[in-house]
Image 1 (cartoon, each protein chain N blue to C red):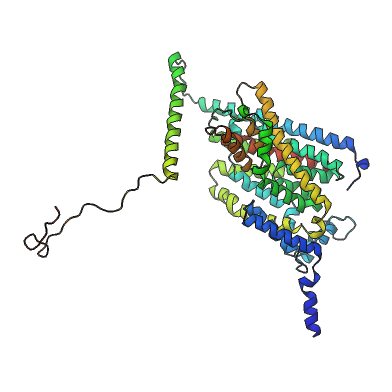
Image 2: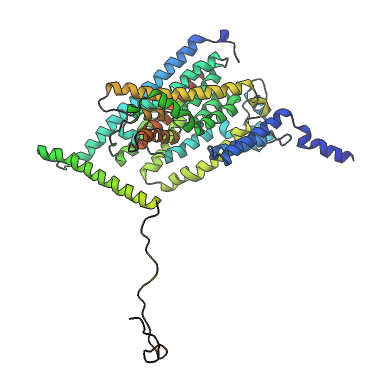
Length: 120
Length: 392
């Protein structure tokens, strides 16, 4: 432990100010590098001779985001419904019973000898 | 009869001091928090058990005096790992990994292998929020100096504001190893308390309208970008700040193993087996440094107070910068994602999501908050490198 009078305050302030500025500066440099990386990679992906559609008609350009939004809304609705069904246990459960019952006929259950009518 | 008396004299009960008793009770309390309340149990449980083991009188599993001699230039055991291996107990030997800065780096490798940097690559401006949230580190450094700590100790206390356990341990083991126990426990305790500490600050610094801001969907990130990212970050950061290279290098190695897709076995090992083994060793040994003589001290209480100040300032820094960015940017940012800049992955991002949904249930901020959140990991490692360069 040090008494406040023994502290080299100029150095402390320098470490505080310079240290924080260096963190900001270094991360700003990284932002530029990431932006550059994004630009380079997206150009490289476009480059190999894939012809991009040059002109999109104005109504089509307006319709595209609207269609994308509608599609996203449908996706969200489907996901929300699935979660609702799952968490509330209302999802339909297939019964495991087999309903088609074949009646085996033999001398023991023949219509001739039986008292009741058999299922058909 | 003499043998029986000698046996009784050797029992731990007969040699226990009041301080050791208090430390044992504290370790029981931490075990309760880990098991019953599930506060960061993966780390708190081994830390609490390490604390229990080191404070058992006569067990001889950890010798703080050996490590004092290890740091004393006039001692024959100065920087002698041989002495530790020869005379130390189990926990002394495991502690070599902390002392040499090995465990935090290996944990960072696992963290890298589990982290998706996609949201950060898609929105690089998140890095600014991650940087602003490091404000807590430097303000606390200033405050700790005024409270009488040395500069090296103040730097170690300040790094608690980075909300990053391995980084705190890495820096403290280099700058102020005598404070390792209290600092590690403070860092992990406050990380577990992120959902309690952050929301009041977030609500106090933002308006209802700001909290309800919806952000546009992030762009998809290609695999190529994800592969180049760790290589580029390691190269740039290590060239500018060599002291940050061990942490950033290991973080990015883990991430590269995950993203490249050709070393799945290595990636899985980093995420699971390696990570778990190192967490056990790190937790036990960090807990072992919390001996009665080093822990039951006024400085521990001061560290706890400074830790929460650091956390609060970091949270506020991120939020305030997000608000400032909104003044100049056309596309509005929800300021709640700024608080996620204090590392603590992914807890801080989840808190942003929760507080955002309280105002607008249809608002999904999680992926947006993951950007500043992982930027905070990089930011705190960079801040640690800077403090190590300036104070080491």
